[in-house]
Image 1: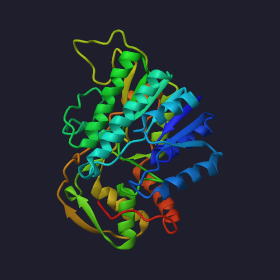
Image 2: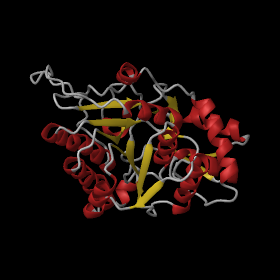
Image 3: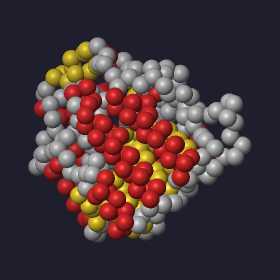
Image 4: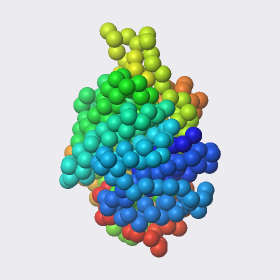
Length: 345
């Protein structure tokens, strides 16, 4: 199929492009190469993908530019859209909220409008485990309501799910939302904890461990993320005429719309995660223990039964193995490439 991947120079996007091209799909990428972190890493990801599977087209387009997004749809006529581009980061949303409105809301609206006026067979879009917010009923299931977000980032992702549902209902666009849980692996973002922790440990810098290292995260290795996306790409949701309006299920709809958790379903305390990092690096961390930060969720754990039922697959790469792969890449890449930002923990 002909597939448009937004955020194609991003962490998940680059891995997704690589997998889809290996599967024989024709892929068109979109990215604005913004400076949220050093754009050199994005260019290096693109070179890495091209080195594996050959050239692929990537349009330098800002999602907030409605005319440019529409022109790309007119020119390329994608059958499937995998929308991964977004302004990411919970804590950064406290510093620059406008960036989240421009990218995550206006940008997503432009994608939906283009899918409306240039019909596609399937729109897959990235949501986030952060939408569960104040909900502490774990494991998190897509069938629970998520009406108490704890950050603007989470609120924009919840809004994306609602926006997609309205367009799915009104215009028949098959929409699948994916709630990702703490994705990690090679080519990850430098504002995420794996690179932050690895840098702090290897350079002997103080490492900030919030909530005193006691909160848990459901870490999910990047290969499990793209495997899930690849399997779901060819299975668009259908209408559910028997959907019960009087007892509505939050994870499905009478419209061709659905949600899936994509998570490792094995939550790990951050203290354990740090110990594994120290083991693979062969060095001990200098740790500064701090309280929980505003916007952070205490614990995450994904119920992935729906994903297994739909695709026959559940994330399976254990954290110890995944971190070993990540550290091997980190040692190879960072001696000669851009340095990550200051440690946030």
